[in-house]
Structure formats: C-alpha cells, structure tokens
Image 1 (cartoon, one colour):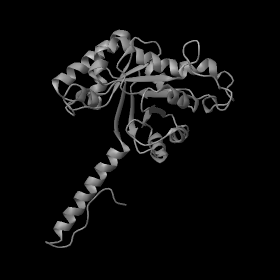
Image 2 (cartoon, helix red, strand yellow; image 1 turned 135 degrees about the vertical axis):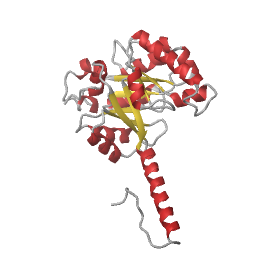
Image 3 (cartoon, rainbow, N blue to C red; image 1 turned 90 degrees about the vertical axis):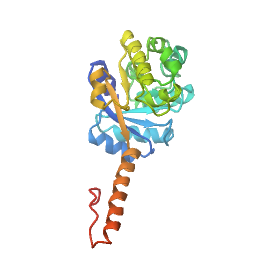
Image 4 (cartoon, rainbow, N blue to C red; image 1 turned 180 degrees about the vertical axis):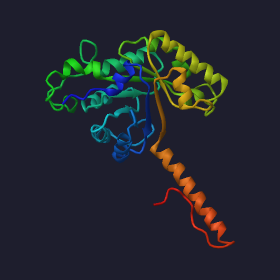
Length: 272
C-alpha cells in the first residue's frame, strides 16, 4: 500500500504539528509515542542510537497510527539518504546545512530523475511496498518531506539561499548548536542567539518556506507556535525518563531521611 505523508499534508495546509524526539533506538518508544497521538516523532540518528534496520522498525511501529516518523540522519551523506528512502522513510531531517549547495545535494540524493539522482529499484524496495504500489516512482518525490536544519552562523548567513532550494520543504532552526556556533554554548536565550534565529526566520518566510524548531530558553512551545513555527519537537524518551528517575530518587532520599523521625512511605507518583 502507498503510505501518504500525513505530516507533509498538515504542513502544506498550514496546520500546527507537535512531536518529540526518540534517541534510544528502541521501537518500543516509537510505538508508545505513536499510540499517544503525536503528529510526528523524530528518530535521532545524529546523537542517538539506531541503524537502518532500527529505522525500519520505527517505521513499522508508527505505521498503524497517524503519526509520521521523521529520521534525523547523522549527516547529508547521500548513500545513506538513498538507503533510508528506499527503506520507506518519507520524512528526513538533515543537520548542519550551511549552504544552498549542500541543500541541493540533499534533494538530488533522494529524488528520482529528472529532479534528482536517486537510483530506481521501485519494484522491489520497501518504499513501494515491495512493488505492490505500481505508480510509486511517479508519486515518490511529492510524498517525501525534506527538512534541513540551520544551526550555525554560516547557515544563518545563507538561510535565504538554502530556503530557496527547490525540494527543501521545511527550515528547522536548531538553537542549541546555533548558540555554540555563536560562541555562547547552551545560552539559547541570549540576545545574540535570538537575533540570529530571527534572521533565519525572516529569510525562510521571504521564500514561503515553513519553519520548525524546538523550545529554547525564554520560548515555550505555545509561544513558538504563536510566532509562526508550524512544527515543534519537544523532549525525548531519555529526557523524560531522566526526569522521572530524578523525582524517584528525590522521593527515596526523603524517605531515607524521614526514617530518623519515624516510618514513612515513598510518595512518588511513578510507582505502581
């Protein structure tokens, strides 16, 4: 069967989309997040675990829901991009895009001729349901969502040219790496970082390209949606589990301390 890209349809319609990151490489969390009803989940292969087979497992986990899987690739290396789209990925997030030339290379790697250089094995790949979608070649390019990340000073300087590249669907602004590129690591709320983000936003808007990002210091999900971003990804399964563990250990230590004054019971809401 043909897998329509629901996230791309939402973005084209101007609808806001909310998602989260998955970094453990476990399809269990992909399945949970998809069942929860998120618009999209991002499998992070730049900073997280997981190989091509894990990406396929994530796709299968999300396939029974309306959630779209986005794969953040380790780099713009074209061979891996092609393997992912042949495997069925229909939404890619490419980090550290600094120039229009890089953006064109990404688009060319995953589009069929005459618009790109992707090889054609559509009669046997998972992307075409192993050939059961006879018109996959005709429909593939339009169904693919290509998101590029601007997260360096050079990327901001070239944001207009990057956004103008045909085939780039969304401009994703990464505030954390951008703050480091500006010599202010981790200071995503600094005025200099905010100024750079606004320059990139303006450049993308001038070309009509929609914007995506993550929450940053001083900007909540709601505020960023109100500023015009259409795609927001917040937190990750590792982040949420760490927060739960911190609360669990806080409750445990409080219980241990209370033993000096008499018996008490752990109060954590994370128990069963």
